[in-house]
Structure formats: structure tokens, C-alpha cells
Image 1 (cartoon, one colour):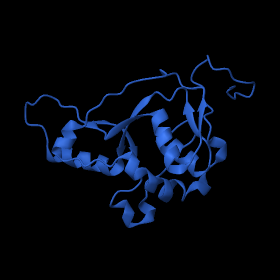
Image 2 (cartoon, helix red, strand yellow):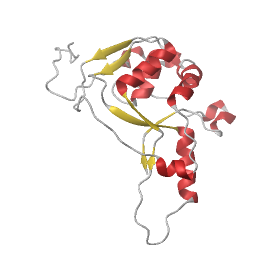
Image 3 (cartoon, helix red, strand yellow):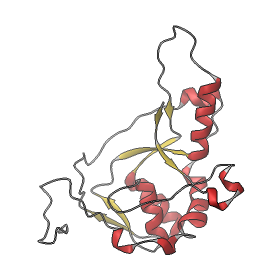
Image 4 (tube, one colour):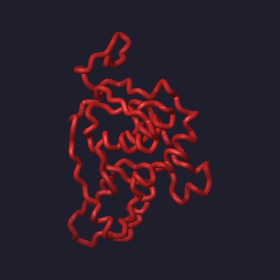
Length: 186
């Protein structure tokens, strides 16, 4: 199974007690772009889009991840079947479109930065979850599930945010100018 970026912090089981909640970690250098945007919106920091924002990522809600694993176990391959690759994802978004969705839901500002990563400015990611849909996957989409995530997790725990770690500090390319302290120059 190929898995997209998992979002969401609750499953039916973790909702039973707050101590079971999945961690929601993020800093400017590591962590998923979705968590970055959600945390930035929660602390009223502009959403940081690196480069053009034309990079495409696949996403899946944690409850759908659990559902996909169950569906795969319940529908094993038959002996001597060819290997099948299942895309464990429910949707794809370009990063600029993802930032616009979160900005629409939260009122956050979007700010572009030179991309510190060594990656193409644009990419197409074409994946199909048709096999899982045929087996009964019921996708939870970002557009309908993110507001709850923003309100119940990112905003609730925003007091734990270390504002010094919001902006990416790592530089993946020698082509990006930095000052004597190692800070990226705009």
C-alpha cells in the first residue's frame, strides 16, 4: 500500500479519552505541510508557502487509513495473484491550493518564501484510490474535516507552540543566499 500524508488526530478509539489523542507535531523544518499550515493558522502566523506552491501531495484522514488497512486485510490476494499496489489516499492537492483552503476556513494570510528545499517547483501526482473505493472506502475529505481539526486540535493546543520554530531554518541548496548567522535572505 502506498500511503499519502495522514491527517487528523482522532479515531473512534482515541475519542474515548483525551490522553489517547495522537500527537500533533510540527516545526519549520520537519513535519507535514498540512500540520504546518494548521499550526500557523492557529497562532495567527501567515501560512508559509515555499516556492510556487505547485508541488502536489496526497492526503488521507487517519480514520480512512485504519479503514484501508481493514479493507486490505479482509480482501487478501489469492494465491499466485499478481502483486497489486493500493493507493491509500483520498485526495491530492497542490500546496498553494491547500493553503488557500486553510486560509478560507481560518482567515489566515498566505505568504510565499523562497523554497529552501531542493525540489521541482511544480509536480503532478496522479494516484487512484479506485481499488479501495470499490472495496467500500468512505473518504473523509479535507474540505469537510479540516475545520474540526483546526478548532479542536491546533487552536486548542496553540499555547504549546514555540514561535521560534515556525519558519524553516534548514537550507537544502547552496543556491539559496544566507546571512552570516545562517538565516535565509529573501
